[in-house]
Length: 126
Image (cartoon, rainbow, N blue to C red; front, side):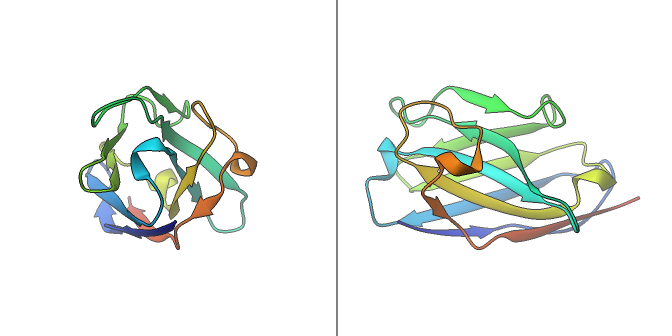
């Protein structure tokens, strides 16, 4: 599976961005998907995850730091996962990575993911 993330950029605090991650290869609808982020000098952290259950939806999970501001969604017909980011803060500045796994439920840890995209930079100015 190849993953290609896009949609990053520079935005002012309080603004919004929508990240996309297009997948090719594999059976997209069966993958659990996630977003992680890595700020300069820090470890890569979990952001959000969505499981594979039916149609275009699925159960979701979020890091405490983004819950209520970020929304993960997927469109299985387009082989794409999204991360809608609202009310952005300077501390959200990071490189954002999408990931996929054949794990059977929501996945919150890097080690559970098999495939990774290349990352897209998000910078939030104060």
